[in-house]
View 1: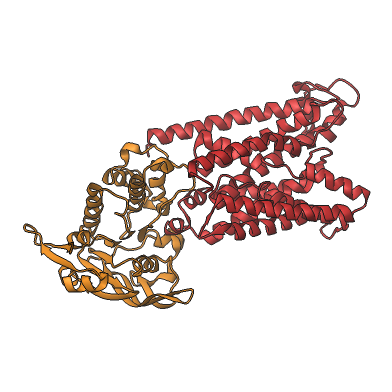
View 2: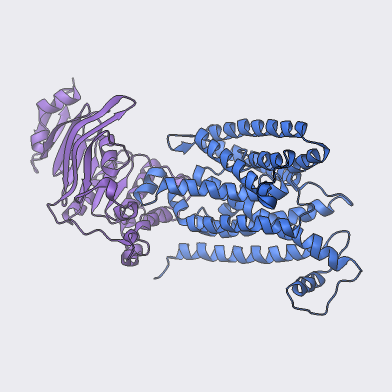
Length: 353
Length: 270
Protein backbone atom coordinates (compact mmCIF):
# COMPACT_ATOMS: atom_id res chain seq x y z
CA UNK A 1 0.00 0.00 0.00
CA UNK A 2 1.31 3.42 -0.86
CA UNK A 3 1.02 6.01 1.83
CA UNK A 4 -0.03 9.58 0.90
CA UNK A 5 2.76 12.12 1.19
CA UNK A 6 1.48 14.11 4.22
CA UNK A 7 0.90 10.92 6.21
CA UNK A 8 4.37 9.76 5.28
CA UNK A 9 5.79 13.08 6.46
CA UNK A 10 3.94 12.74 9.76
CA UNK A 11 5.32 9.25 10.27
CA UNK A 12 8.82 10.38 9.36
CA UNK A 13 8.64 13.17 11.87
CA UNK A 14 7.44 10.80 14.60
CA UNK A 15 10.34 8.44 13.88
CA UNK A 16 12.85 11.25 13.95
CA UNK A 17 11.50 12.67 17.19
CA UNK A 18 11.49 9.22 18.81
CA UNK A 19 15.11 8.73 17.86
CA UNK A 20 16.13 12.20 19.10
CA UNK A 21 14.35 11.70 22.42
CA UNK A 22 15.92 8.28 22.86
CA UNK A 23 19.43 9.61 22.25
CA UNK A 24 18.80 12.57 24.55
CA UNK A 25 17.45 10.26 27.23
CA UNK A 26 20.50 7.98 27.12
CA UNK A 27 22.86 10.98 27.30
CA UNK A 28 20.88 12.58 30.13
CA UNK A 29 20.77 9.32 32.08
CA UNK A 30 24.53 8.77 31.75
CA UNK A 31 25.27 12.40 32.68
CA UNK A 32 22.87 12.39 35.60
CA UNK A 33 24.28 9.13 36.97
CA UNK A 34 27.82 10.50 36.81
CA UNK A 35 27.08 13.92 38.30
CA UNK A 36 26.91 14.72 42.00
CA UNK A 37 29.07 14.80 45.08
CA UNK A 38 30.90 11.77 43.76
CA UNK A 39 31.36 12.15 40.03
CA UNK A 40 32.16 9.74 37.25
CA UNK A 41 32.58 10.17 33.49
CA UNK A 42 29.88 8.81 31.14
CA UNK A 43 32.35 6.09 30.05
CA UNK A 44 32.87 5.02 33.66
CA UNK A 45 29.11 5.05 34.24
CA UNK A 46 28.56 2.90 31.17
CA UNK A 47 31.31 0.50 32.23
CA UNK A 48 29.84 0.16 35.72
CA UNK A 49 26.41 -0.44 34.24
CA UNK A 50 27.73 -3.14 31.88
CA UNK A 51 29.64 -4.76 34.74
CA UNK A 52 26.33 -5.12 36.58
CA UNK A 53 24.96 -7.21 33.74
CA UNK A 54 28.13 -9.28 33.47
CA UNK A 55 30.18 -7.48 30.80
CA UNK A 56 33.47 -6.36 32.32
CA UNK A 57 35.25 -3.73 30.24
CA UNK A 58 38.00 -3.33 32.82
CA UNK A 59 37.15 0.33 33.36
CA UNK A 60 36.61 1.18 37.01
CA UNK A 61 35.59 4.63 38.29
CA UNK A 62 38.30 6.45 40.21
CA UNK A 63 37.83 6.87 43.93
CA UNK A 64 37.00 4.23 46.51
CA UNK A 65 33.25 4.58 46.92
CA UNK A 66 32.22 5.76 43.49
CA UNK A 67 31.26 2.37 42.09
CA UNK A 68 29.19 1.50 45.14
CA UNK A 69 27.52 4.91 45.10
CA UNK A 70 26.65 4.50 41.45
CA UNK A 71 25.12 1.05 41.81
CA UNK A 72 23.21 1.50 45.05
CA UNK A 73 22.19 5.18 44.93
CA UNK A 74 22.46 6.76 41.50
CA UNK A 75 21.29 3.94 39.23
CA UNK A 76 18.04 3.26 41.07
CA UNK A 77 17.36 6.97 41.31
CA UNK A 78 17.90 7.59 37.61
CA UNK A 79 15.88 4.51 36.65
CA UNK A 80 13.13 5.70 38.99
CA UNK A 81 13.08 9.13 37.36
CA UNK A 82 12.81 7.50 33.91
CA UNK A 83 10.01 5.17 34.97
CA UNK A 84 8.02 7.80 36.84
CA UNK A 85 8.48 10.46 34.18
CA UNK A 86 7.14 8.05 31.56
CA UNK A 87 4.25 7.06 33.84
CA UNK A 88 3.19 10.65 34.54
CA UNK A 89 3.37 11.78 30.92
CA UNK A 90 1.32 8.83 29.68
CA UNK A 91 -1.18 9.22 32.54
CA UNK A 92 -1.69 12.82 31.39
CA UNK A 93 -2.12 11.72 27.78
CA UNK A 94 -4.73 9.12 28.76
CA UNK A 95 -6.68 11.59 30.87
CA UNK A 96 -6.69 14.17 28.10
CA UNK A 97 -7.98 11.55 25.67
CA UNK A 98 -10.88 10.36 27.81
CA UNK A 99 -11.84 13.87 28.90
CA UNK A 100 -11.40 15.15 25.34
CA UNK A 101 -9.62 18.10 26.88
CA UNK A 102 -5.92 19.02 26.71
CA UNK A 103 -6.04 20.60 30.19
CA UNK A 104 -6.80 17.37 32.03
CA UNK A 105 -3.76 16.32 34.08
CA UNK A 106 -3.41 14.08 37.17
CA UNK A 107 -1.92 16.88 39.29
CA UNK A 108 -4.34 19.59 38.18
CA UNK A 109 -7.55 17.63 38.71
CA UNK A 110 -6.51 16.13 42.05
CA UNK A 111 -5.71 12.51 41.12
CA UNK A 112 -2.13 12.87 42.35
CA UNK A 113 -3.15 14.31 45.71
CA UNK A 114 -5.80 11.61 46.00
CA UNK A 115 -3.15 8.96 45.47
CA UNK A 116 -0.94 10.74 48.03
CA UNK A 117 -3.76 10.52 50.59
CA UNK A 118 -3.88 6.76 50.00
CA UNK A 119 -0.11 6.41 50.31
CA UNK A 120 0.07 8.58 53.44
CA UNK A 121 -2.70 6.75 55.26
CA UNK A 122 -0.66 3.56 54.83
CA UNK A 123 2.21 5.27 56.67
CA UNK A 124 0.27 7.06 59.38
CA UNK A 125 -1.85 4.05 60.28
CA UNK A 126 1.03 1.59 59.80
CA UNK A 127 -0.94 -0.46 57.29
CA UNK A 128 1.05 -3.38 55.92
CA UNK A 129 -1.52 -5.88 54.64
CA UNK A 130 0.13 -6.11 51.20
CA UNK A 131 3.71 -6.01 52.50
CA UNK A 132 5.96 -3.68 50.51
CA UNK A 133 3.12 -3.30 47.98
CA UNK A 134 0.81 -1.66 50.52
CA UNK A 135 1.77 1.93 49.73
CA UNK A 136 1.43 1.67 45.93
CA UNK A 137 -1.76 -0.39 46.18
CA UNK A 138 -3.39 2.18 48.44
CA UNK A 139 -2.11 5.00 46.23
CA UNK A 140 -3.65 3.22 43.23
CA UNK A 141 -6.96 2.65 45.03
CA UNK A 142 -7.30 6.25 46.17
CA UNK A 143 -6.13 7.56 42.79
CA UNK A 144 -8.73 5.39 41.05
CA UNK A 145 -11.48 6.67 43.34
CA UNK A 146 -10.54 10.30 42.64
CA UNK A 147 -10.30 9.71 38.87
CA UNK A 148 -13.77 8.18 38.81
CA UNK A 149 -15.05 11.05 40.94
CA UNK A 150 -13.59 13.73 38.63
CA UNK A 151 -14.98 11.90 35.66
CA UNK A 152 -18.43 11.57 37.15
CA UNK A 153 -18.56 15.14 38.43
CA UNK A 154 -17.09 17.07 35.53
CA UNK A 155 -18.93 15.50 32.61
CA UNK A 156 -22.30 16.64 31.42
CA UNK A 157 -24.02 15.51 28.26
CA UNK A 158 -21.01 13.50 27.12
CA UNK A 159 -18.49 16.31 27.22
CA UNK A 160 -16.26 18.05 29.73
CA UNK A 161 -16.20 21.81 29.88
CA UNK A 162 -12.96 23.45 30.93
CA UNK A 163 -14.61 25.40 33.74
CA UNK A 164 -16.32 22.36 35.24
CA UNK A 165 -13.17 20.28 34.99
CA UNK A 166 -10.97 22.86 36.69
CA UNK A 167 -13.49 23.68 39.40
CA UNK A 168 -13.88 19.99 40.14
CA UNK A 169 -10.09 19.81 40.33
CA UNK A 170 -9.94 22.72 42.77
CA UNK A 171 -12.57 21.12 45.00
CA UNK A 172 -10.87 17.72 44.97
CA UNK A 173 -7.41 19.19 45.51
CA UNK A 174 -8.77 21.16 48.47
CA UNK A 175 -10.42 18.08 49.90
CA UNK A 176 -7.33 15.91 49.48
CA UNK A 177 -5.18 18.72 50.90
CA UNK A 178 -7.37 18.74 54.00
CA UNK A 179 -7.15 14.97 54.27
CA UNK A 180 -3.35 15.20 54.03
CA UNK A 181 -3.38 17.92 56.71
CA UNK A 182 -5.46 15.66 58.94
CA UNK A 183 -3.02 12.81 58.39
CA UNK A 184 -0.12 15.15 59.19
CA UNK A 185 -1.90 16.10 62.41
CA UNK A 186 -2.50 12.45 63.36
CA UNK A 187 0.93 11.13 62.43
CA UNK A 188 4.05 11.03 64.55
CA UNK A 189 7.18 12.99 63.70
CA UNK A 190 8.60 10.54 61.17
CA UNK A 191 5.25 10.12 59.45
CA UNK A 192 4.96 13.91 59.26
CA UNK A 193 8.31 14.17 57.59
CA UNK A 194 7.29 11.60 55.04
CA UNK A 195 4.02 13.38 54.30
CA UNK A 196 5.78 16.69 53.71
CA UNK A 197 8.15 14.85 51.39
CA UNK A 198 5.13 13.46 49.55
CA UNK A 199 3.57 16.82 49.00
CA UNK A 200 6.76 18.29 47.61
CA UNK A 201 7.62 15.29 45.47
CA UNK A 202 11.16 13.92 45.39
CA UNK A 203 13.16 11.06 43.97
CA UNK A 204 15.64 11.26 46.82
CA UNK A 205 16.41 7.90 48.43
CA UNK A 206 14.97 5.71 45.64
CA UNK A 207 15.94 2.08 46.14
CA UNK A 208 16.15 -0.84 43.70
CA UNK A 209 13.52 -2.54 45.79
CA UNK A 210 11.12 0.35 45.16
CA UNK A 211 11.95 0.44 41.47
CA UNK A 212 10.99 -3.22 41.24
CA UNK A 213 7.63 -2.51 42.88
CA UNK A 214 6.86 0.49 40.64
CA UNK A 215 8.06 -1.04 37.38
CA UNK A 216 5.32 -3.70 36.90
CA UNK A 217 2.59 -1.10 37.55
CA UNK A 218 4.07 1.21 34.95
CA UNK A 219 4.72 -1.53 32.39
CA UNK A 220 1.11 -2.69 32.63
CA UNK A 221 -0.04 0.93 32.31
CA UNK A 222 2.10 1.67 29.26
CA UNK A 223 1.30 -1.61 27.47
CA UNK A 224 -2.41 -1.16 28.12
CA UNK A 225 -2.28 2.40 26.82
CA UNK A 226 -0.61 1.18 23.62
CA UNK A 227 -3.55 -1.15 22.99
CA UNK A 228 -6.02 1.70 23.41
CA UNK A 229 -4.26 4.23 21.15
CA UNK A 230 -6.37 3.74 18.00
CA UNK A 231 -9.64 3.74 19.87
CA UNK A 232 -8.63 6.91 21.71
CA UNK A 233 -8.23 8.58 18.31
CA UNK A 234 -11.81 7.66 17.44
CA UNK A 235 -13.01 8.91 20.83
CA UNK A 236 -11.98 12.41 19.73
CA UNK A 237 -15.01 12.32 17.41
CA UNK A 238 -17.27 12.19 20.46
CA UNK A 239 -18.78 9.20 22.24
CA UNK A 240 -21.62 8.63 19.80
CA UNK A 241 -19.53 8.77 16.65
CA UNK A 242 -16.90 6.53 18.25
CA UNK A 243 -19.63 4.00 19.03
CA UNK A 244 -20.91 4.19 15.45
CA UNK A 245 -17.41 3.25 14.35
CA UNK A 246 -17.48 0.14 16.50
CA UNK A 247 -15.80 1.33 19.70
CA UNK A 248 -17.24 0.07 22.97
CA UNK A 249 -16.97 3.45 24.65
CA UNK A 250 -17.88 2.29 28.17
CA UNK A 251 -15.19 -0.38 28.22
CA UNK A 252 -12.65 1.99 26.70
CA UNK A 253 -13.39 4.66 29.28
CA UNK A 254 -13.18 2.36 32.30
CA UNK A 255 -9.97 0.75 31.00
CA UNK A 256 -8.33 4.12 30.43
CA UNK A 257 -9.35 5.33 33.91
CA UNK A 258 -7.93 2.22 35.58
CA UNK A 259 -4.68 2.55 33.63
CA UNK A 260 -4.41 6.23 34.59
CA UNK A 261 -4.85 5.36 38.25
CA UNK A 262 -2.25 2.57 37.94
CA UNK A 263 0.32 4.95 36.45
CA UNK A 264 -0.35 7.81 38.86
CA UNK A 265 -0.58 5.48 41.87
CA UNK A 266 2.79 3.93 41.00
CA UNK A 267 4.40 7.32 40.48
CA UNK A 268 3.03 8.90 43.63
CA UNK A 269 3.70 5.88 45.85
CA UNK A 270 7.46 6.47 46.01
CA UNK A 271 8.02 9.92 44.56
CA UNK A 272 5.09 11.96 45.84
CA UNK A 273 3.23 14.62 43.90
CA UNK A 274 5.08 15.67 40.76
CA UNK A 275 2.63 17.83 38.86
CA UNK A 276 2.45 19.16 35.28
CA UNK A 277 4.63 16.49 33.61
CA UNK A 278 1.42 14.99 32.24
CA UNK A 279 0.37 18.40 30.96
CA UNK A 280 3.56 19.76 29.43
CA UNK A 281 4.91 16.66 27.68
CA UNK A 282 1.82 15.44 25.80
CA UNK A 283 1.09 19.01 24.80
CA UNK A 284 4.57 19.59 23.36
CA UNK A 285 4.43 16.29 21.51
CA UNK A 286 0.98 17.13 20.14
CA UNK A 287 2.30 20.46 18.87
CA UNK A 288 5.07 18.69 16.96
CA UNK A 289 3.30 15.53 15.79
CA UNK A 290 -0.41 16.26 15.75
CA UNK A 291 -3.00 14.52 17.91
CA UNK A 292 -2.81 10.85 16.77
CA UNK A 293 -2.35 8.81 19.94
CA UNK A 294 -0.02 6.08 18.66
CA UNK A 295 3.01 8.30 17.98
CA UNK A 296 2.04 10.56 20.92
CA UNK A 297 2.22 7.63 23.30
CA UNK A 298 5.74 6.59 22.29
CA UNK A 299 7.15 10.11 22.27
CA UNK A 300 5.38 11.10 25.50
CA UNK A 301 6.82 8.05 27.25
CA UNK A 302 10.33 9.08 26.20
CA UNK A 303 9.68 12.81 26.70
CA UNK A 304 8.35 12.31 30.22
CA UNK A 305 11.33 10.12 31.09
CA UNK A 306 13.72 12.73 29.68
CA UNK A 307 12.04 15.62 31.49
CA UNK A 308 12.19 13.94 34.90
CA UNK A 309 15.75 12.70 34.37
CA UNK A 310 16.95 16.21 33.55
CA UNK A 311 14.70 17.67 36.25
CA UNK A 312 16.14 15.36 38.86
CA UNK A 313 19.68 16.18 37.77
CA UNK A 314 18.89 19.87 38.29
CA UNK A 315 17.17 19.15 41.60
CA UNK A 316 20.27 17.35 42.88
CA UNK A 317 22.91 19.77 41.62
CA UNK A 318 21.41 23.29 41.35
CA UNK A 319 22.13 24.10 44.98
CA UNK A 320 25.33 22.56 46.41
CA UNK A 321 24.73 20.02 49.19
CA UNK A 322 20.96 20.32 48.86
CA UNK A 323 18.41 18.06 47.22
CA UNK A 324 15.58 20.24 45.94
CA UNK A 325 12.12 18.63 45.75
CA UNK A 326 11.51 17.87 42.08
CA UNK A 327 7.75 18.39 42.40
CA UNK A 328 8.50 22.01 43.26
CA UNK A 329 10.65 22.36 40.13
CA UNK A 330 8.09 20.85 37.76
CA UNK A 331 5.40 23.12 39.21
CA UNK A 332 7.65 26.19 38.83
CA UNK A 333 7.96 25.41 35.13
CA UNK A 334 4.56 23.81 34.61
CA UNK A 335 2.49 26.46 36.40
CA UNK A 336 3.22 29.28 33.95
CA UNK A 337 2.84 26.82 31.07
CA UNK A 338 -0.59 25.94 32.38
CA UNK A 339 -1.54 29.64 32.49
CA UNK A 340 -0.47 30.03 28.90
CA UNK A 341 -2.50 26.98 27.81
CA UNK A 342 -5.50 28.21 29.73
CA UNK A 343 -5.40 31.66 28.16
CA UNK A 344 -4.97 30.17 24.73
CA UNK A 345 -7.88 27.78 25.08
CA UNK A 346 -9.99 30.67 26.41
CA UNK A 347 -9.14 32.80 23.41
CA UNK A 348 -10.03 29.95 21.05
CA UNK A 349 -13.32 29.20 22.69
CA UNK A 350 -14.20 32.90 22.86
CA UNK A 351 -14.71 32.66 26.63
CA UNK A 352 -14.54 30.03 29.34
CA UNK A 353 -15.92 27.23 27.22
CA UNK B 1 -12.31 -16.15 12.13
CA UNK B 2 -13.40 -14.31 15.22
CA UNK B 3 -16.84 -12.78 15.20
CA UNK B 4 -15.40 -9.29 15.45
CA UNK B 5 -13.97 -9.56 11.95
CA UNK B 6 -17.19 -10.77 10.35
CA UNK B 7 -18.31 -8.85 7.27
CA UNK B 8 -22.11 -8.56 7.16
CA UNK B 9 -23.80 -9.74 3.95
CA UNK B 10 -25.10 -7.10 1.55
CA UNK B 11 -28.84 -6.48 1.66
CA UNK B 12 -30.58 -7.05 -1.69
CA UNK B 13 -32.34 -4.06 -3.26
CA UNK B 14 -35.92 -3.82 -2.02
CA UNK B 15 -35.21 -5.96 1.07
CA UNK B 16 -35.73 -4.53 4.54
CA UNK B 17 -32.57 -2.87 5.84
CA UNK B 18 -34.11 -1.38 8.98
CA UNK B 19 -37.37 -2.40 10.56
CA UNK B 20 -38.73 -0.46 13.54
CA UNK B 21 -41.95 -1.46 15.28
CA UNK B 22 -43.90 0.22 18.07
CA UNK B 23 -41.10 2.62 18.91
CA UNK B 24 -41.71 4.55 22.12
CA UNK B 25 -39.21 6.78 23.91
CA UNK B 26 -39.74 8.57 27.20
CA UNK B 27 -37.21 10.97 28.67
CA UNK B 28 -37.69 12.17 32.26
CA UNK B 29 -41.32 11.09 32.10
CA UNK B 30 -41.89 13.12 28.93
CA UNK B 31 -43.12 11.27 25.87
CA UNK B 32 -40.79 11.91 22.93
CA UNK B 33 -41.95 9.12 20.59
CA UNK B 34 -44.93 6.79 20.69
CA UNK B 35 -46.01 3.86 18.54
CA UNK B 36 -43.79 4.63 15.55
CA UNK B 37 -43.46 1.95 12.86
CA UNK B 38 -40.88 2.54 10.16
CA UNK B 39 -39.30 0.52 7.35
CA UNK B 40 -36.19 1.37 5.39
CA UNK B 41 -35.42 -0.66 2.27
CA UNK B 42 -32.14 -1.18 0.49
CA UNK B 43 -32.00 1.04 -2.58
CA UNK B 44 -34.18 3.89 -1.32
CA UNK B 45 -33.77 7.33 0.22
CA UNK B 46 -36.15 7.85 3.12
CA UNK B 47 -36.54 11.39 4.47
CA UNK B 48 -37.65 12.00 8.04
CA UNK B 49 -39.46 15.32 8.22
CA UNK B 50 -41.55 17.17 10.75
CA UNK B 51 -41.65 20.37 12.83
CA UNK B 52 -39.12 21.18 15.55
CA UNK B 53 -39.48 18.83 18.50
CA UNK B 54 -41.49 16.26 16.52
CA UNK B 55 -38.93 13.57 17.38
CA UNK B 56 -37.03 13.21 14.07
CA UNK B 57 -33.56 13.16 15.59
CA UNK B 58 -34.68 10.94 18.47
CA UNK B 59 -36.11 8.49 15.94
CA UNK B 60 -32.84 8.48 14.02
CA UNK B 61 -31.06 8.01 17.37
CA UNK B 62 -33.26 4.98 18.03
CA UNK B 63 -32.43 3.48 14.63
CA UNK B 64 -28.70 4.08 15.15
CA UNK B 65 -28.73 2.75 18.69
CA UNK B 66 -27.98 6.05 20.45
CA UNK B 67 -31.33 6.60 22.12
CA UNK B 68 -32.69 4.07 24.59
CA UNK B 69 -36.08 2.58 23.76
CA UNK B 70 -38.92 2.54 26.25
CA UNK B 71 -41.00 0.24 24.02
CA UNK B 72 -40.65 -1.40 20.63
CA UNK B 73 -37.99 -3.15 18.58
CA UNK B 74 -35.42 -2.21 15.95
CA UNK B 75 -33.96 -4.74 13.55
CA UNK B 76 -31.03 -4.12 11.25
CA UNK B 77 -30.94 -6.57 8.34
CA UNK B 78 -33.32 -8.82 10.26
CA UNK B 79 -31.18 -8.95 13.42
CA UNK B 80 -32.27 -7.11 16.59
CA UNK B 81 -30.09 -4.03 17.10
CA UNK B 82 -28.95 -5.20 20.55
CA UNK B 83 -27.64 -8.52 19.16
CA UNK B 84 -25.14 -6.86 16.84
CA UNK B 85 -21.48 -6.81 17.74
CA UNK B 86 -20.58 -3.10 17.69
CA UNK B 87 -17.69 -3.61 15.30
CA UNK B 88 -19.69 -5.72 12.86
CA UNK B 89 -22.56 -3.23 13.00
CA UNK B 90 -20.10 -0.49 12.06
CA UNK B 91 -19.52 -2.35 8.77
CA UNK B 92 -23.27 -2.43 8.12
CA UNK B 93 -24.37 1.11 8.92
CA UNK B 94 -22.75 4.54 9.21
CA UNK B 95 -24.20 7.51 11.07
CA UNK B 96 -23.67 11.24 10.63
CA UNK B 97 -24.59 12.96 13.88
CA UNK B 98 -26.02 16.44 14.05
CA UNK B 99 -23.10 17.99 15.89
CA UNK B 100 -19.62 16.92 14.91
CA UNK B 101 -17.16 18.53 17.29
CA UNK B 102 -13.69 16.95 17.37
CA UNK B 103 -11.69 17.18 20.59
CA UNK B 104 -8.18 17.50 19.16
CA UNK B 105 -6.80 19.18 16.02
CA UNK B 106 -6.83 16.14 13.73
CA UNK B 107 -6.42 16.94 10.05
CA UNK B 108 -9.38 16.48 7.71
CA UNK B 109 -7.60 13.54 6.06
CA UNK B 110 -7.13 11.87 9.45
CA UNK B 111 -10.80 12.39 10.30
CA UNK B 112 -11.93 10.82 7.02
CA UNK B 113 -9.49 7.92 7.53
CA UNK B 114 -11.22 7.24 10.86
CA UNK B 115 -14.25 6.17 8.82
CA UNK B 116 -12.19 3.17 7.75
CA UNK B 117 -11.53 2.03 11.35
CA UNK B 118 -14.27 -0.66 11.31
CA UNK B 119 -12.58 -2.38 8.34
CA UNK B 120 -9.22 -2.75 10.02
CA UNK B 121 -7.77 -6.26 9.76
CA UNK B 122 -10.50 -7.36 7.33
CA UNK B 123 -9.76 -8.08 3.63
CA UNK B 124 -11.57 -4.86 2.68
CA UNK B 125 -8.85 -2.89 4.47
CA UNK B 126 -7.17 -2.77 1.06
CA UNK B 127 -9.88 -0.37 -0.12
CA UNK B 128 -9.01 2.18 2.58
CA UNK B 129 -7.07 4.55 0.42
CA UNK B 130 -9.54 4.55 -2.46
CA UNK B 131 -12.55 4.88 -0.15
CA UNK B 132 -10.99 7.88 1.61
CA UNK B 133 -9.92 9.60 -1.60
CA UNK B 134 -13.30 9.03 -3.22
CA UNK B 135 -15.27 10.29 -0.22
CA UNK B 136 -13.11 13.42 -0.07
CA UNK B 137 -13.61 14.06 -3.78
CA UNK B 138 -17.38 13.64 -3.54
CA UNK B 139 -17.69 16.09 -0.65
CA UNK B 140 -15.08 18.46 -2.10
CA UNK B 141 -12.84 18.48 0.95
CA UNK B 142 -9.66 17.28 -0.82
CA UNK B 143 -8.50 20.87 -1.17
CA UNK B 144 -8.18 21.32 2.61
CA UNK B 145 -7.31 17.71 3.46
CA UNK B 146 -4.30 18.71 5.55
CA UNK B 147 -6.00 21.50 7.50
CA UNK B 148 -6.89 20.96 11.16
CA UNK B 149 -10.55 20.09 11.55
CA UNK B 150 -11.29 22.61 14.37
CA UNK B 151 -10.01 25.45 12.16
CA UNK B 152 -12.66 24.81 9.48
CA UNK B 153 -15.94 26.69 8.97
CA UNK B 154 -19.19 25.03 9.98
CA UNK B 155 -20.02 23.98 6.44
CA UNK B 156 -16.56 22.60 5.79
CA UNK B 157 -16.74 20.58 9.00
CA UNK B 158 -20.10 19.17 8.01
CA UNK B 159 -18.68 18.07 4.66
CA UNK B 160 -15.56 16.55 6.24
CA UNK B 161 -17.74 14.58 8.67
CA UNK B 162 -19.94 13.45 5.79
CA UNK B 163 -16.81 12.30 3.97
CA UNK B 164 -15.91 10.21 7.03
CA UNK B 165 -19.36 8.58 6.95
CA UNK B 166 -19.13 7.91 3.20
CA UNK B 167 -15.65 6.42 3.54
CA UNK B 168 -17.13 3.88 5.94
CA UNK B 169 -18.83 2.31 2.86
CA UNK B 170 -21.75 0.68 4.63
CA UNK B 171 -24.99 -0.66 3.19
CA UNK B 172 -27.04 1.54 5.49
CA UNK B 173 -26.40 5.28 5.86
CA UNK B 174 -28.12 7.45 8.48
CA UNK B 175 -27.77 11.22 8.20
CA UNK B 176 -29.06 13.65 10.82
CA UNK B 177 -29.64 17.02 9.17
CA UNK B 178 -26.62 16.79 6.87
CA UNK B 179 -27.61 19.98 5.02
CA UNK B 180 -28.10 22.27 8.04
CA UNK B 181 -24.79 24.14 7.78
CA UNK B 182 -24.40 23.97 4.01
CA UNK B 183 -24.83 26.44 1.17
CA UNK B 184 -27.17 25.76 -1.73
CA UNK B 185 -24.61 24.01 -3.92
CA UNK B 186 -23.45 21.66 -1.20
CA UNK B 187 -26.99 20.95 0.02
CA UNK B 188 -27.84 19.71 -3.43
CA UNK B 189 -24.56 17.80 -3.62
CA UNK B 190 -25.25 15.95 -0.34
CA UNK B 191 -28.66 14.77 -1.49
CA UNK B 192 -27.31 13.86 -4.91
CA UNK B 193 -24.73 11.69 -3.14
CA UNK B 194 -27.55 10.14 -1.07
CA UNK B 195 -29.42 9.35 -4.31
CA UNK B 196 -26.32 7.81 -5.87
CA UNK B 197 -25.79 5.62 -2.85
CA UNK B 198 -29.41 4.45 -3.04
CA UNK B 199 -29.04 3.80 -6.77
CA UNK B 200 -26.03 1.63 -5.94
CA UNK B 201 -28.26 -0.42 -3.63
CA UNK B 202 -27.65 1.21 -0.24
CA UNK B 203 -30.37 2.21 2.20
CA UNK B 204 -30.29 5.89 3.14
CA UNK B 205 -32.33 7.57 5.85
CA UNK B 206 -31.94 11.31 6.25
CA UNK B 207 -33.44 13.85 8.63
CA UNK B 208 -34.34 17.00 6.68
CA UNK B 209 -35.86 20.35 7.51
CA UNK B 210 -36.24 21.57 3.96
CA UNK B 211 -39.43 20.04 2.61
CA UNK B 212 -38.46 20.90 -0.95
CA UNK B 213 -35.23 18.91 -0.66
CA UNK B 214 -37.26 16.01 0.69
CA UNK B 215 -39.77 16.32 -2.16
CA UNK B 216 -37.05 16.51 -4.78
CA UNK B 217 -34.74 13.73 -3.63
CA UNK B 218 -36.55 11.24 -1.38
CA UNK B 219 -38.22 8.06 -2.62
CA UNK B 220 -40.38 8.11 0.48
CA UNK B 221 -40.92 10.59 3.27
CA UNK B 222 -42.00 9.90 6.84
CA UNK B 223 -43.75 12.85 8.46
CA UNK B 224 -43.51 13.00 12.24
CA UNK B 225 -45.79 15.16 14.35
CA UNK B 226 -45.66 15.40 18.11
CA UNK B 227 -43.85 12.10 18.62
CA UNK B 228 -46.06 10.07 16.30
CA UNK B 229 -45.76 9.00 12.70
CA UNK B 230 -48.35 11.17 10.96
CA UNK B 231 -47.98 9.64 7.51
CA UNK B 232 -45.42 7.93 5.34
CA UNK B 233 -45.21 7.29 1.62
CA UNK B 234 -44.21 8.86 -1.67
CA UNK B 235 -43.55 12.62 -1.42
CA UNK B 236 -46.56 13.55 -3.53
CA UNK B 237 -48.85 11.54 -1.24
CA UNK B 238 -47.52 12.90 2.04
CA UNK B 239 -46.68 16.46 1.09
CA UNK B 240 -50.16 17.84 0.52
CA UNK B 241 -51.16 21.39 1.37
CA UNK B 242 -53.69 20.22 3.99
CA UNK B 243 -51.29 17.85 5.76
CA UNK B 244 -48.45 20.32 5.94
CA UNK B 245 -50.68 23.19 7.05
CA UNK B 246 -52.07 20.96 9.78
CA UNK B 247 -48.75 19.55 11.04
CA UNK B 248 -46.65 22.71 10.73
CA UNK B 249 -49.54 25.00 11.68
CA UNK B 250 -48.81 27.32 8.83
CA UNK B 251 -50.74 27.54 5.56
CA UNK B 252 -48.84 26.47 2.43
CA UNK B 253 -49.38 26.04 -1.27
CA UNK B 254 -48.07 23.12 -3.25
CA UNK B 255 -47.02 23.95 -6.79
CA UNK B 256 -45.62 21.54 -9.33
CA UNK B 257 -42.28 22.20 -10.90
CA UNK B 258 -43.02 23.03 -14.54
CA UNK B 259 -40.33 20.71 -15.88
CA UNK B 260 -39.93 17.84 -13.37
CA UNK B 261 -43.44 17.80 -11.93
CA UNK B 262 -41.98 17.42 -8.41
CA UNK B 263 -43.84 19.11 -5.56
CA UNK B 264 -42.63 22.50 -4.33
CA UNK B 265 -43.85 23.69 -0.96
CA UNK B 266 -44.42 27.44 -0.73
CA UNK B 267 -45.46 28.96 2.61
CA UNK B 268 -48.29 31.47 2.22
CA UNK B 269 -46.92 34.96 2.79
CA UNK B 270 -48.79 38.23 2.91
